[in-house]
Image 1 (cartoon, rainbow, N blue to C red):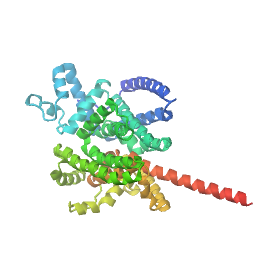
Image 2: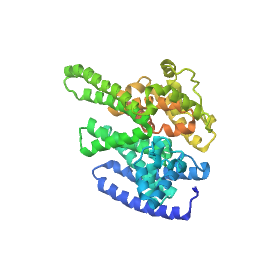
Image 3: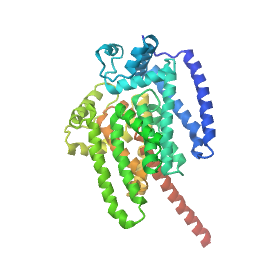
Image 4: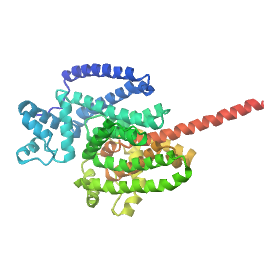
Length: 451
């Protein structure tokens, strides 16, 4: 019988693990801070992830008393038990796909929820974590938080590759967005996907944007792609075209000769986008879940399932799944992703956290749209990262807002886009305040000189 309680052993081992972790990470900080000044935020970022992970674990232990996170942990616990009692079967299970051979199908009686490839992969990942946590849920959550921190730190460093002077803004966006702190630190597919998205973004930028083509970077790009694709393919399928579009802009701006730039940019754009348009559907076809002919039925399934599982639901009133009707729902889908739940829609503690975050982003967005007007959109071409942030926030925000129909699910699903959305808004606010201060300084200087 699986248990959800927390014992004194968990706390003692947890404190011991934390001491070891902080000693190791303080050493890493000391080794790097002279050359890389962003490491002054290294321990703060680590602490945020650990606090988020512990909050997530305690909420699921004492409030929800179960859920997907517990299922993954218990599935990993079951696999670890086979390592102790039957190592050969353990290895076979760890290297088996979800299409089990007949003599391994018995595992579905013990881990019944892990019939889908995504769930089975997450169980195997959790089993590896459990090997180092002595099958203690709090410790496994703590170790998952370290993986999340690793990916988040790489994402933060990628932001700084494009904007090295915006260390605080990038840190706020990546590490202090509440939904990412909570939903991106525990034992969930979303946490692992988010971490590997950070790794994928960092090493892709190194290779394609900054010309640092190291063999390990190419290997990590490949591995990160595989992990994300097999856990949550839509995350990487929506990110790839955005990366390619921003890369086109980068190539165009690096051409010094204006005539050559005008001639070659459309050709490069045509070739790169052609590859994107051709490859993304091809990759999608390799997954039964994301085949184009199955998308409508899957969207309908998401809508009906998420409105019947309980919790807090919403409805975009989709009755027609034609392309035009879906496009008409883009504003409503983006609104629900980034600006809902509204305060009056709150009925759970986790929804309250989401409502506070959404309200702050709503107020900031309204202020920026009023003061910047057209510039709110035109700033998206200021740099490749701004273009990536804008496009990914739009594309991914629409996708999850349109399909989720449940605020609890949406809180988890949207976290890959949240740092990009937050960075875009924070960047606009920073430049608006900067221009405002310049005007005030000039006005004060003029008044002083005229006296």
